[in-house]
Image (tube, rainbow, N blue to C red):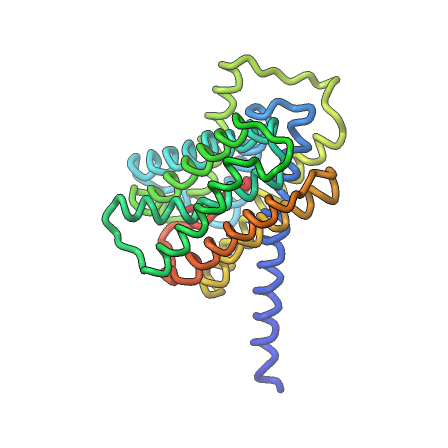
Length: 312
């Protein structure tokens, strides 16, 4: 029995880490929706990622020293590019889209990211497995239904278009993250990505005329923003990186089809967002397609950010 104790402890740690990634990253769509009630979407994203970058960077410096941030200009540029694609464009457009569509619908459409990654692999002449292609076709069938019908709920074509562009941008950034020079330390790389992504959001926010009216910001928006910074960008990301080094990648990658389910449930329970029959059916089709893609892709990716979701 003594020999089984370490295995049981590791198993509990793995499932605890998965629970964090499942629930926290799934809940970020709801948190974003609450934040943008009283804080402009691009400005709130910039505040979130710059703050998270500074905190993560300080922790990395404290625990690993300056050597963690030793990198070439090409590696710095690679991390900056990925941060702009993932966070400035990808996450920024998620926040914009949630002004027009429910957080649950946004999460279901963002679930198409693994499908877009397969398409990009095909473009790069990296032939995927037959089952992967079948999963892509099934998943995009669900995406098409949601896009054309809006899930049968009151939605906006502009919001759906924006969220699809966000998914595409996130996919391109994820695809490039393993193909451009990146810092060796994954935590340092993430801090740089968040810093440049956040600065990009703040610059665009300033350009389009967003401004923060402190008197108009609600307590629940501030609370949701703090939740995104601490839980979404720091705690869940740390749990995710730990899982990559201690659990099978096929198990870790299940977040891709658990997160949208969590997001839909939380949106319905907390914000009373409508969940229609067509939305459930199309969402299940997307989840099945993504699950098939994830289950047939066993290769561990060389860059953490390629597996990170758009939560955002």
